[in-house]
Image (cartoon, rainbow, N blue to C red; front, side):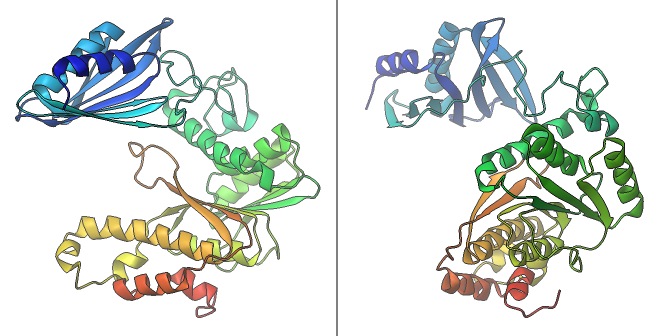
Length: 387
């Protein structure tokens, strides 16, 4: 057990420019503030600590200096909260306190966690498509002005586009430059990401590509085709078509699907596997299939709550999709696409073909049996369902 003096010394050591975040939780007695979060910010070249106090459904912010934050952290642990979690570039610390004023400090070393520029409060984040640098199609789509400024109401869309390009940037080594690549975007909609993919790979990185955007809405396809022609994107085309029945190519190098509803995502993943796609990037939407089928005596008391069953079903749907792709030879990750505060539909399935099938058949069957489900992607891959 450590004393308050030892805790104060530890706080002085870790609350500095290397601190990434702090969270104080576990209220000692019910009061106004339920939780406190802290992160360092850079304001006019000075490191401050932004303190966020959660009171009901509202959050109140204030900035403190390093010394002020060290004193406030000690006060929070002594009077308001039972636990403090502090993450630094090299260390993860948990401080636990009891009513007698004794503390336990748990520490774990870790690799450098901070990304360059993450302290900046006023400084703009570096994006792949930069603020201030004019991108013609972004103006046409209402995201940017002619001066290169981001339209404030479209800033979330701008961040979403760049976040998606970061995922593509990570897999560039998997895309060969010695041949022309075929990239298909299923359910492209207004095609913010389709244009971004083309611009990033073709214009900024010099890849020889043929990009196909596919959607069911004729007016959307017509408008996107006009835009591609206007900017002389000759290897970018838009077609009206359905994911399940599309047969315009026999091979694809990358398949993208953003918010294809329910089992449309499964058909897109199946097509990608059949075409031998090296890269699959999919953000699923409206996962109803498991929710309709899923039954479990062991979990019946939990599944009586519709919202719980719906969210569990959505997570299981995407987790199993990832596992089916692993079985097909893909190294698959489930990643956060955009912050949960913007949309709950924020999981991205990123799969890279490795050629080595995962030995997970028995586990998949156990899960299917336990929840009494027969997913569409499984049926398609096994040839049980005609596409």
